[in-house]
Figure: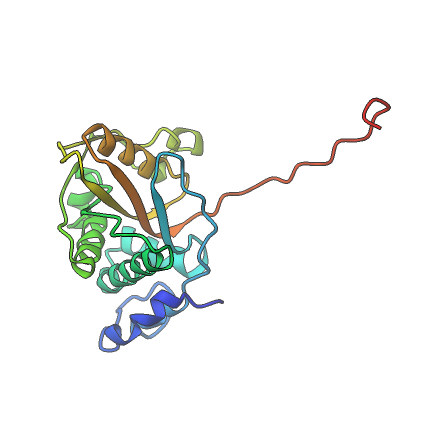
Length: 228
């Protein structure tokens, strides 16, 4: 499988780290997990987002790694994933000859129940790692109302996204929103709308993995006497 070029850059940071229960059935170190992520998905950002970054498609090893972090408490790769995301964000800015896109970092919060069950909010840990490597402040801006987890809902139900509200934000703030994975895009779009309502000027999104959009090719229309 094609290696993710940004994950490769952080392999050396993980040489001394191993996973007792590697989701990829490998002996470690964690670099074995990161090195086989990919490919980067073709994901077009929604109109209400100012930019979008993903390290890999949500399939194969990348999906296994994200699920292990979300549901099995795997934390050892989080810091390195944060650095990989930060490097990719910086590279995009350089290639596009753009100024710094963000003034602060936040994340899509887990529900209170899941945070208690897992002992931490893994999206927060990821966001703080990204913020550290971008030299930006990390702020807990979003608050999540009680409700079922997104992965327990049908695709139709998930499109409405979780109920989120944001603390007030400086009107000139450019927010980098972090999440582990996006499938329908509902959570990040809902979060972006909440941040904008609270005053954010721009919202860009960065995730570890994304489900590429599925396009159904249109069948050519049969010729009729009128169209000839």
